[in-house]
Length: 226
Image (tube, rainbow, N blue to C red):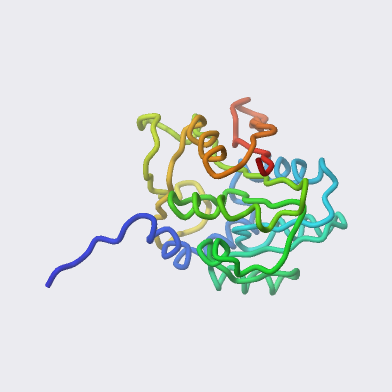
C-alpha cells in the first residue's frame, strides 16, 4: 500500500479544525501577550483611521475583531473556513459566514465592503496568492485591504531568512493545542512582491512595537487595488 504525504498547504486548514477550541480559549482569555499589549489595538486603529462604513474580516477566527468594530458603530462581517470557529463567533454575537479561501476566490461571497481585513490569517502559499488575486472583486471603489501578520524579522528565529514552510508548535500560547500548524514564512521583500504580483499597490506599512522590548510585534500592510 502506498501512502501519500499531504502537502503543508492542505494541512493548514486541517490543523485549524483540530485547534479551533484551543484557539478560541486562547484569544478570549487574552493569553497571547503581543496581542493583548500591541497587535489587537494596532489592527483596530489601522481599520478605524479611514473611518470605514463596512468591513469584511477574512479569516475571522472566533470573531473578536468583528465584535470590537461593532462596539464602535462599524458594520462588520466575518468569514472563516472552520465550522467550529464560526459557531463560536455566532454564539458570541455578530454576522459570520462559513467559506474557505478557495470558495471566496471563486466568488461565493455576494457582497462588497470598503475595507477588507486579514488579521494573522494569511498562512498558506498558493491559497493566499489565489485569495489576494480575487479580493478586488469584494472591494468597493477606492477601498483598501489591511493585512496584519507576524513580523518576518521577529518570526524568523534562528532559521534562515528566506521564504519557506514553518511549523507553529504553540509554545507560550497558554492553552493545549492538539495539532502543530504549518504556515508559510515570507520575508518583508516577499510580502511586498506578493502584493504587487496579485494586483495591489502598497500605500503604507506599519510596524507596531512591543512596549517592553521596543521590537516590532507585527507588520501591517495597507494596500489598494492597483
